[in-house]
Image 1 (cartoon, helix red, strand yellow):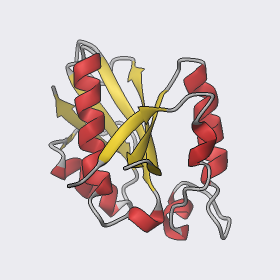
Image 2 (tube, helix red, strand yellow):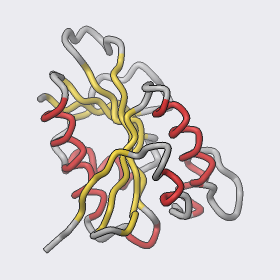
Image 3 (spheres, one colour):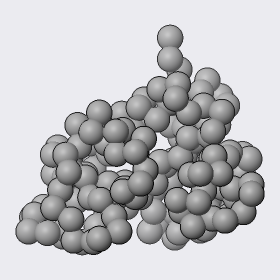
Image 4 (tube, one colour):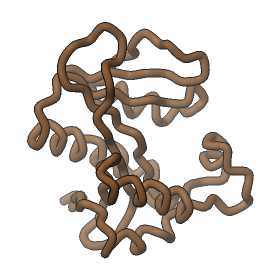
Length: 160
């Protein structure tokens, strides 16, 4: 049985996620040119905003071991859509757990959590056009490509 769960990342537990790593190729997609991707730095910045209530930051746990994290926030109106909208700002799965359905199960858990805890009519996700696994994850999870306002980013939408 697949035992993936999510937990809210707080000021007390965020450091247990600091050793998670993405591949060098994934780090370069986000502008990180280091040989060893610095997930710790990114998580530290997101945790700062989460504790300020700007982000909702969650960790993915396989049994009790951290395997990734995700964040979402509420957005101003995107396009001509009315109602409350949510933006998945990040989903990160440690490089040792990629291609093993952790991303698929993680986004399902996140979508379920958002739907159960917030009254939203749309969930959006921004994806780098070169990030084929992220594009496939969105499509597999029920998102559709939304009209893009930006040249450098793809916008996907999920109707709730």
